[in-house]
Amino acid sequence: QVQLVESGGGLVQPGGSLRLSCVASGFTFNIWAMSWYRQAPGKERELVAAIGIASSSTNYADSVKGRFTISRDNAKQTVNLQMNNLKPDDTAVYYCRAQFLRTTYWGQGTQVTVSS
Image 1 (cartoon, rainbow, N blue to C red):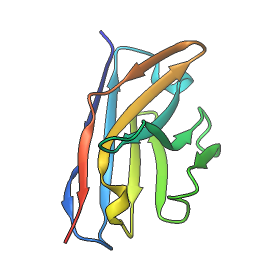
Image 2 (cartoon, rainbow, N blue to C red; image 1 turned 120 degrees about the vertical axis):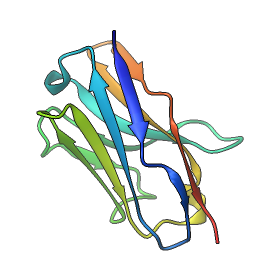
Image 3 (spheres, rainbow, N blue to C red; image 1 turned 60 degrees about the vertical axis):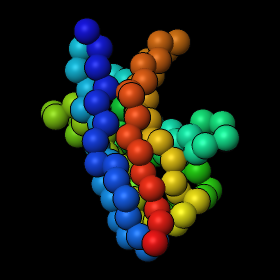
Image 4 (cartoon, rainbow, N blue to C red; image 1 turned 90 degrees about the horizontal axis):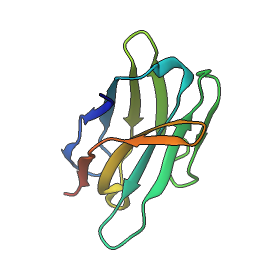
């Protein structure tokens, strides 16, 4: 059974940091591309960051470049998103996604709220 379980969300003040983690199970993690998406109320889900099967291959949304870092640990079947200098506009539900060819799996999401 495929599972993607996110954790690490919460309430943080502007300028603060959070680290999201997504633990995968039920598939061969190291051959799947992994990414983080987010969806704010009333908005469409958008790509935040992605990482290929080689950790050297990453890309980021312009809005998070220089603040967020995506990484993966194939031995632990985990993908992480380090988020620094958080802004109120970063408030959203963050989702982990796994993709291999035309197959996609999603996690259940974790809420991130940036507010003073």
